[in-house]
Length: 523
Image (tube, rainbow, N blue to C red):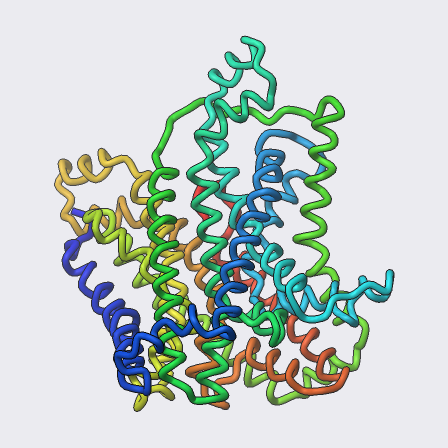
């Protein structure tokens, strides 16, 4: 038995939540698309493909996601191999910090890119070269935010390479390059392509980076949906676009689920020990890894920190700003509530998914829809409760709890089934076996999942834009408001807020996660 209350009682709240917060809003958007001026007109449904303006948005959305996914694989695969196979100074710190961008809120990441490459960034001050809001800034921001999505799962997959087989191949005269392609690549390719699908999905359905860095010329479909709803009140066309984005998300999520299932096959092997750096090729690989790590991980964060430290007055002004304290309080309240709700829902979903394989399909359901679609769908479906705190927290929980579920499922899969059998044989009731055997095994996994849920809630932006009230301003929305106001002082305050949010996110993440542990999943 997966849980003392039984798998049925574990699955019922999960299915009810997904039905109310995911399926019903999508159906509401479909109904809205059919009633708000689009009706059954084929032209209206094909507008993203036939209208020149929308087609440009669609092509750019696909292009920036594909380019980012490809670049993340080209840069992340060698970096992951270097971190997993070679021992060199700074390797441990690099392996730990490479995950930092994933817990950085999207608006903080966007400000870091602007502080480095923007018209007032450090690159412009040093070289006179800068980039206006557009393609280069968005692609760089995407890579900064998603490089770790490829690196961490690939490092885990490389642990499945058998040291004995590797040594035998080298003894038979195979070069390191040939060993990689014939022995290592077949074992890691499913994990690499699954990570590439995830990167594509994050870029295809992301709002924060595209809204701040892309500008009007390089706006994505998510930005277009937000513009249609927030500024033009064109709910019908926005619903059509949202459904097209969801359809694309379904296809990519299905591919990701299939590849992730292949990559998750457990293998008991003798791990390959890391080797010291010998020879010019290995030294060059390490130097290139340092360069990738510094340029795509450290520089944006260092740039925004340096920019924010330039003015002590901006920091002093924040302490006296009532908006800041209101936003900070709201951010902490919403994050705490999201962590609790996500932990409960993720635990129930994980227990049900461990007992019933078909429940694992719903684990990927929140990936299908973007945060924009979640907020928009909840706004359409529950207009009378759109200003309700529970609706806002439901949106937060939907985008955050899959991290907990994935972590719980992985922990349950790794737990030997003999443990529960032995407890039951010794007379333990299902509840006592769960409390004394299963729950202690799950606690580290729950902490890891809760850490990522907290990081997601701290940086949540799209749901807040649709469902938040003025008195519910969070740090992310306050940063966006300051960026929208003219003047260098507002930009400086936005940068100071971003640094504060970054420190808060990393502190809460480390507090909840505890001591870092090796893990093969991206969660």
